[in-house]
Length: 360
Image 1 (spheres, rainbow, N blue to C red):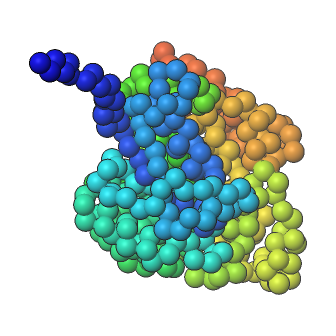
Image 2 (spheres, rainbow, N blue to C red; image 1 turned 45 degrees about the vertical axis):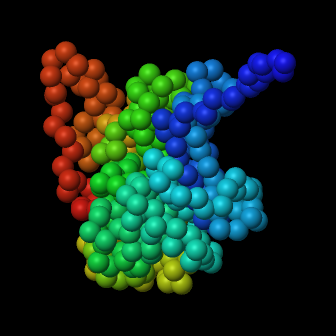
């Protein structure tokens, strides 16, 4: 009599539960490494209770149409972990842009995949100049697009029918999220982690990365306001050079040389277009930036003076007081009193110093 066979005991590996937050990344050619790393590292730290980088609560996938590594703008290369997969597997798909004018950023297969993801209702995130890629794919029509103030005019030139925003850290417009890059990517990543996994998890990631308290998306980009519409291209270029050299101001003669103008021609242009000499405008621009730092950071007055391109604190304070009627130290002292007595200094007017914004 055949003995009854005991059922074979099998060890079945439990199907892992889908992570609560899954993000797909697409890296453009010459992408900005900091934008990618700030985002993915917050996911990595949020994914595991410890610091073992196990993708338990979060999962991240680097996708691409080709198997070759993608080169970042700093020269580092990053390999994909997957080809394009069903976009519905992700809670977000983030496109990391970078250098604008160094050839094609992504190929047509990538554009098609982004359009497929949009049709599937997957939220799309444009990091740095990833917003340009989403706009080129026709996916930002009727949406607000957050860009870096540095690329505001580039965006307008390429997409004249869009309305870019350059005075925010990031913008959420339905299932489209755009972020200008830099440190604001950390704020956006923290917002997404908190939204998906809770405040405590997001806080843990920030603390390990030694990041300060996350800033909201509507916090201002730290850039100096300028004139809204300037027809003369030479003046526009001069203003851009000034913005790029706030901490280390250029000589007006050097700016003129870069624009292939004489110093006298540049002086005349500024007087005609802005009603100010370039040196006076440049100083006002730096003071505007200093006022922003004073109002929005806890940096020392000396640090702010250096950051705004003034050789010493006394020189900075003298010009600041001539403009505002109170010194930077007075401002800080009044802020301290305002914590208990209420506000003592009215907010800066939008038309102070350099007028309306050029970059948003």
